[in-house]
Length: 394
Image (cartoon, rainbow, N blue to C red):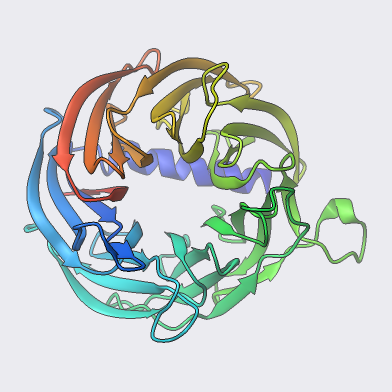
């Protein structure tokens, strides 16, 4: 598994540094919240921009597609199709959200809906591809489960081929950890495993993934002993609330963002066993009040790590010590908006864009390649309730 993680991250960095960075010109798609419980945010769905990586300018192209609560997006390999989770509690009478497939027109930035299916759990909040590009994996937050969906060559998404309930001991936060809450899912480089961050269980669960069938099965933990039936996982400290995960460039270290305590926990991957070696806060010393950490991203160079804080409304910057995997705090900058949720580093590694949900704006920062520090370039887009940013090469 150690080699699996290493290959995964090397492939991602390679793609970011070659395929995407050649032109420096991208389409930028913005997922949003359109509203729930009768509340209208003013958003219509997914918005698109033409983004120049050289100048940092974003040209608005308007509404790319109208769809309900497209809170997380994934682009198919090759860039012909885009997929969104529809973060809903009810879908056609079921306790479920939706998954919607779109054909992507690179010339216009418009999306044409192909079809939609039930996510098989309420409030889907994350979506990603397996390594073959033939399956989508979805984390259902309120449903507390994860699901796999086949994707046909023409871009249509099929009904779920696998649905698995996250299981384990609940964390101590009675309000937020009352049951399992799957918040993030991605596969390993060799397509053998799927990693799932579960906020309710204080764990990153590891499922076995069968790419020939599109199925998930719980992995047995080596620590549990021979014959024991337990999830293979990395366990965070109580009330951490794992939200999203990032891996080091060499695959030796896993970084888990804790939504509930606004921390990053560093795990070393030691012979298929994850052990915690550091826990560091993303908040200023003495901070009091409400804060929910939201996103974690490692710079394409592998030297820096970024997280977002909702409440403190900031981006925290850390340097990564290559040999030990440990983090050192570098900088914290205001996001110039309210409730920064998702953010994205452009594939060349030169700029970071952050989506401020409650102030309805996207703010750009230049990245210092030597230190990782951020320098604000100001607001580049006004979007109602933006919560996800995705770059696509033109």
